[in-house]
Length: 205
Image 1 (cartoon, rainbow, N blue to C red):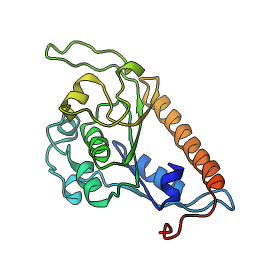
Image 2 (cartoon, helix red, strand yellow):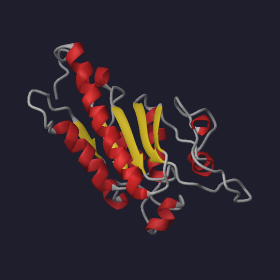
Image 3 (cartoon, helix red, strand yellow):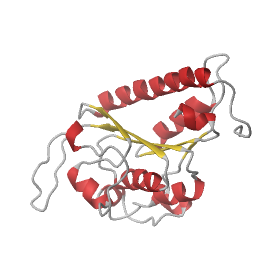
Image 4 (spheres, rainbow, N blue to C red):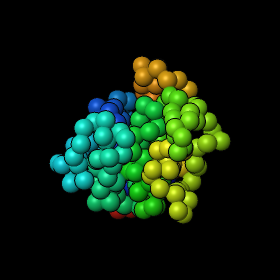
């Protein structure tokens, strides 16, 4: 992340809770530590019609993949550069729009990071339980050829370079772990930016 910011990249954040995505973007744009530089970040809208996605359907429909699945992917295609970082945040690893957004970001060459919870999920043609999201069930690296968002939705796999899992199915615990994780990301990014020195020429935005 630090190397991408150093070269002029930005952070693109999206998730199943818009307030969380907006908070992360603000953390990077408005540093609370004196002397730390502001970093370019944007939180994507979860409003499918406003964002130009396929829209339609209830919240339940969207979670089940029947509507709004392209809401973040559509915006990533229009806002992202290959030097950017995409961060998707969701409570249980199943939100189709977040999965599709991460998938699209990976296809475009962005660094992709997911913050998710570890709630039990069902999948497969018979609806059998697949159990908690485990490290050996997590895709690291970009999406393999032939794999679809539906595959990720059913198997619990997350199409991201780095997947940070809050090992709990309690939404309150997951949220607290995510808050800690993105504050650590902010801290570490600035540690490495300090080592990299002044921004690259033309990298300021």
